[in-house]
Image 1 (cartoon, rainbow, N blue to C red):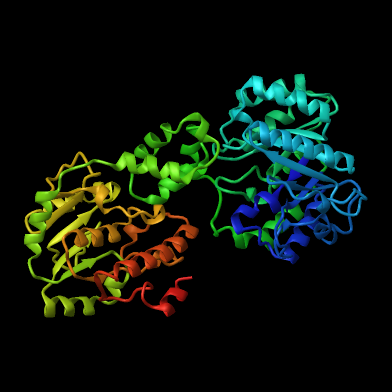
Image 2: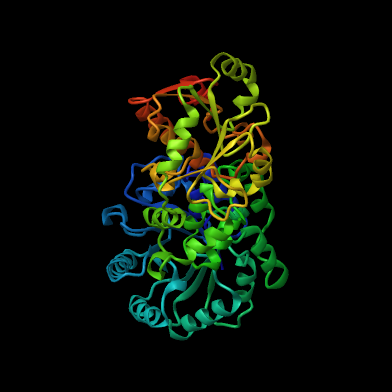
Length: 536
């Protein structure tokens, strides 16, 4: 049996905002394709928006699945905290037929889920029990849970590969553990994530098993789902048609992609990525790896080192504060920078200070910058790059990844340009003139804690500079090609992160302006409402 979870798991991509027409059309096409079970979305205690697939009452779903196909099972998922009982009316066949319950591996959540499941069964619904991160359960804990599930006798019990880490041998071992111990009336489901690109092959393994028990395979159209995505419904349907039983129609699935889902592929897109691979091989939540990759400051080797430090109890559930602490500790190299600060202050003297960041405006507004330099003769500091159009007095580098890519250029400029590095950058092949303490320049906000431009401003603040002039501090656009003057500097930070960073940087600069004069030599979204709105 196939269960399509596009409208629920795929919702992590677009915040479940598919649009009412699309929701109805997707359900209609899935029904035409003869998909056995269609998941319509989440049931949660929220204010309902009919363009989304997060519902607050079973009645919300009713009109979207009409006319119902008698051979199709329609379901929704409830996660904790569970929706109030009065939103679940007694089953009458006019709305969804089943409910999927998900919970974490702790006694409180397990007890609540089983009690809630009992209530749903009494009301007439098919209940799917889905423990998050089944792969993290010990055999003893899993068997203890199975014993309780056997008393409940739900419609299905799931093996959930939340972290996308299962290889064939582990999958089959866990399946046989379930198959041997579950009540024979309970179906076994498999929900995978495609971090190691094994969802398709693992599904094939399960489908080749000789068993009297029904096996339910979860998938989504086009693999739509958070991060690396899910098993593709169209691929597994075609595989079953060719190798087991010709029961699914493929064209309606392709029409869903063509007519409804293609527009979501870039916000942000899903599929294979290095962060999700690194997360999988370290058996940890993919958001840990994404968070570190989005920093764009450390190498893949360093990311791997940090992830290996996460204790087992922290690996399954994402904790942003914890990973930020690990990151900062990894970067921390304390130095006494008293003499370095004195040397830099002496070099600057009474000159005005111009900080140049690598925004595209330094190319578009080159004439403005050159006029400012000619008229004011400032002390020029570039941030994490060396511009060709200007002779900089100093280059400030806080990004070890960027430093590594620039070593040869820096070496050539060493005579004319002072190199300022933060103490997290080690094993330098080029002697750094000035090393400043990394920790003293960090911001408290984790999202922008080590933003290089802001750290450079903080450095000037430590030098008691009253005014700073900024060029190339454009702000981030959702069109990444517009963010840097050189394509070599474009990074792969997720778009949602860009929006958040703009807001936080803007707020931080406003707070700095209370004690330091900030002047923009080039256009920036941080002091221009019109440009800020155009960035999106």
